[in-house]
Image 1 (cartoon, rainbow, N blue to C red):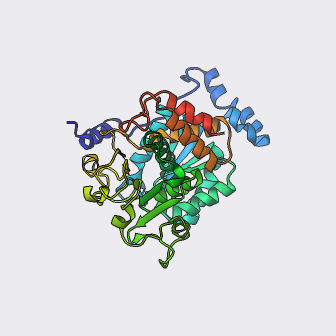
Image 2 (image 1 turned 180 degrees about the vertical axis):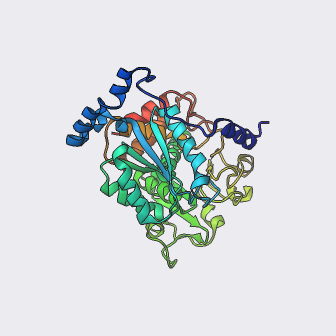
Image 3 (image 1 turned 45 degrees about the horizontal axis):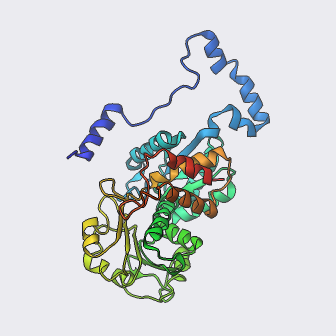
Length: 380
């Protein structure tokens, strides 16, 4: 079996990273080439864009370029490991944008975790880019950073840890409902994790029409009786329709769906056995999920998904973000709305052919060619 950590270290060292810049003009081999690409010819382009900035989409890289911005405060499951720890992940994100969506993406890791500084930096670099992908910024700061940038910038801003995850989870649930025959309006959902991903998933499920959601954080079930909740947690407490209290065990009991975006190994087979019939378990903690698929199946789970690539039903953001930004750039949208996210989730679910839909296949592979095309068409 491949030692992926060792192989990754060796390959990153060999190539000194994953990405590089290449020329759209070809090689610069003559004085004419140099004079067109640079001075004196480029002055005409500079004068044009100074007078008509909107033409940057026609005469510069802006039309197909996004920034992948992180402060390194919430990298994968590694936590707050700073900008250098974030850099290889942001490089990887840029590589996937190009590989799957044809989008040119630049990794920008910041040596600050101050909310105001991050907002100011992104505001000031925005003329270069057609969109901003925020990545691995911890909650609750990520909510304010995204909200203010969405409000003030004329280009789309998308925090992938929130919305990419939510889109793929919703797509998985849409197809799970097709298989189980359950109705979204009667669905009971338990979510473990009330950070960026958990809150975004909860919000998108509510927007889609799923209203019974019991969310759990490190202190237990979120409900209206708890003090000192963040505004985002107060918002989600409203959807605890069963007025549940207690811990994760109580939250899972009787649920149709468990969604984990929290801590490895916190769910047992016995806990899964208390869920409803034909239960769905999406345990997405990485690299070790809240419960391993074998244990979830042993507890009676009908459909199981993880964030891992070595099991069926990989619920991974790579299914969403290349298509989301391909569509946002192609259709020149100013903001990626909730309706667009839901349409993207429906499009992603539809990428699974009805004849292939099964408990072992509720989402497509990112290598299927129709995924980016269908999601991009939904972002408009």
